[in-house]
Amino acid sequence: DAGITQSPRHKVTETGTPVTLRCHQTENHRYMYWYRQDPGHGLRLIHYSYGVKDTDKGEVSDGYSVSRSKTEDFLLTLESATSSQTSVYFCAISEWTSGTPYEQYFGPGTRLTVT
Amino acid sequence: DQQVKQNSPSLSVQEGRISILNCDYTNSMFDYFLWYKKYPAEGPTFLISISSIKDKNEDGRFTVFLNKSAKHLSLHIVPSQPGDSAVYFCAASASNTGKLIFGQGTTLQVKP
Image (cartoon, rainbow over all chains, first blue to last red; front, top):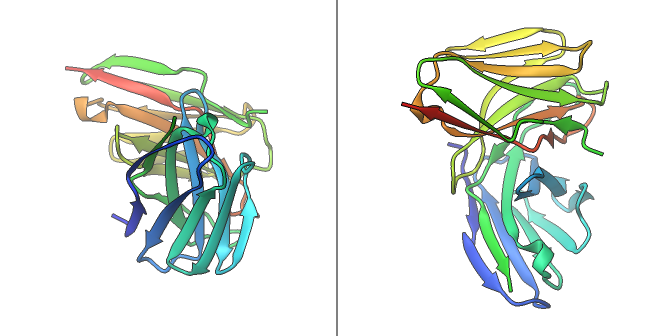
């Protein structure tokens, strides 16, 4: 298994509070991603990083921010949590290089409930 | 606009029979396709992939077929086993990006 951990694994929070989820990897992979999984939608990309301090938006980035100050850590912040952000969040890593096929490897997920 | 679609939310098959999971895509720039399997309370795990220069890739009981003209791929599992019961996601990417686009998933149940 790829060395990817996510913390916390479960969190319940109230509407309007800030929340930070952490992804930690031991594989030294360049690319890191945050997804959310919701019924009927599959996995949707929130933000991704292609290096330290280099990040970009995915398809559902509104209400989320990210930071990557070290290769091994990628943080996802919900600036003011809303009930629509109740979801399961997955971190993934890859060693993608332009023009080559690649796989992404996923962490175990964080179940977030916003009440 | 869903670029990758799995139109069957669920599939039930008998143990030992073939399972066929389908996936359609709309973006002709996609040139690499993957299947992931996901058990409850776990992250998705990579299963098998195929490049657009091929039309078939086989790995043990799992075979992926790609029909570029129809923009369609399928995953065949033969023979199906109860341990194959999971959610299966197809995903696609263009080789000039580092991103995957996932389908909605299909829940496979293999009955003993």
